[in-house]
Image 1: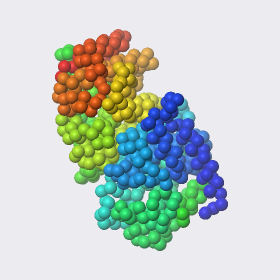
Image 2: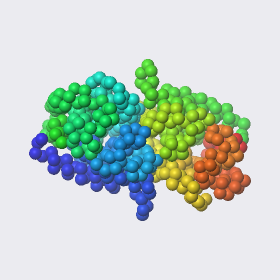
Image 3: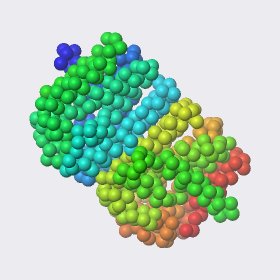
Image 4: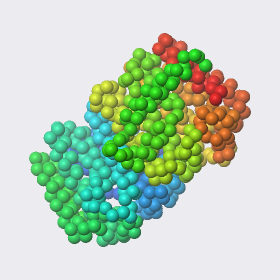
Length: 297
Length: 297
């Protein structure tokens, strides 16, 4: 890991956390149960990887942090909605997430479903508002909404989760695992990067290269997450071996931890190669690739 | 009821149904289970009130049916998502909707939740695409997305459902019932009308008047729905007295069927009054108000 990345990540995380708090609904003196439930999962933490990628991609093409911040937070809200719904009893039935009780174990199933629905819907509202206030041109905003909704919808994240559930307990190939990964986590990671790039004013070449970067990064990230699940990392806050107990096919379970780690490093190299035409402003994106692809914890 | 409204409604419904089928994902030779589940609830029917209102509002200010059609269908997808989630065991726990088994009774809870999530997300994709292809100007599209997401999110439809669940079995005032109605169904009905009006090129005065129309119409519509639930109408396809059995407070339950019907007619008059500056192009909106406010079946 390069020396500068930890403070960079922590600094951005702090800015994102503060902005998320501002953006969450707070309609009256006392929060409604729905608002409490939304807030609970947003404030439950996480690395804020997607919003950081969005902001770093914007900066890589010369954009400002300020301009990308609200879009970045909206993406984190969509990610959080997906975690709340994935954890539900009828889905992965998880009681813990990031080391604390999942939304439905605290607020009940109905409010957990509704909090997810509201986070997803409000996210699009926040993105649209950036176009109405002309912080970002409406022409760019509609492209961002198309990118994100495509990545999150029936041809992206939601279908990834549907596949994942359908494949539980079944024998699957490496190719199929990669497909599920690319739908379930890869698509939104890609959209985080392209959204940021669009905000920053990327040209078509840059967009393509950043998309390529995001694709490899997303795969590497997921493989390492699955390795950490086997090795018992605490960072993702679920109990060790959770995937194996649920009979979920993962890359390291199929090819072994060592080969999986090697694969993640190769993917990281490819992600870095995609950035070869970028100057120093892409430093954070490069550091992020190193950081995510080689994590040991 | 005026003579022309039934054929108008049926004609539009046919056009909307056809377009919805085109817009639903169909990614390969054989549909995925997720796509099947989305399709099932969309094709389960319904009056298509929201898309019809969207198109009629557009026509009222001189817009074309073609231009409003995709936005109208996207709104119906959002409405359908809300029905799928409302019917879930942890929410209203309904086995029948529009006379046929609810989504989760056919596909299971997980796929029902995911189908709802996908319909909601894909809807925003379809709206954004109208701005990218410049069928509608991106400046108008971001306003439409803001209107619809605000109406559907944590300050609209989702909070209405959260309130509704929280109030089950409790004594509530007429004011509180109206508040829940206006959030749960009124907000999206209003957004259907304002979205159509924006597509059609409405000016600020027209927008305000149409919003006012939609507000009264939405309340009248909900009151009549609740009256029909007590009187045993078959149109909404749930068993007679379903609300009462669930201990849901409704307007007619509180003030009686007769006063509720009178109230609905008064609201209909107010809706019509809001249209007084509009010419004959608002004929369908006027007919719709008569039709919805005075329904006997």
